[in-house]
Length: 68
Ligand code: FES
Image 1 (cartoon, rainbow, N blue to C red):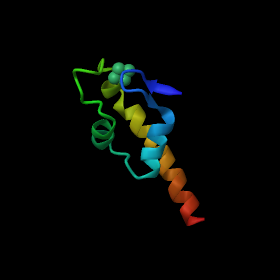
Image 2: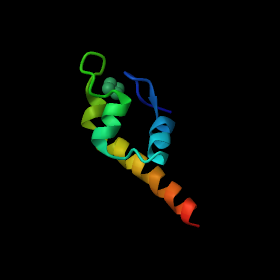
Image 3: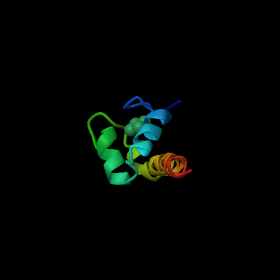
Image 4: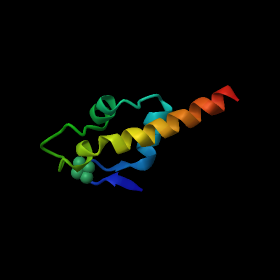
């Protein structure tokens, strides 16, 4: 499912970043190109905490599966 139309970002893209340990909102925004004022409507940078929550959730799952 697409969660950002401007950049064509899918929920699975954010999950993959989370698995790789990219959960910091600033790093997520930079990696996903959401600071690009020319080509983004600005909606997703305002909601970056939701992206971070998705990434963090995936990171936590990946960590718990490594530990078990
Ligand atoms: S829909 Fe994501 S920046 Fe516009």
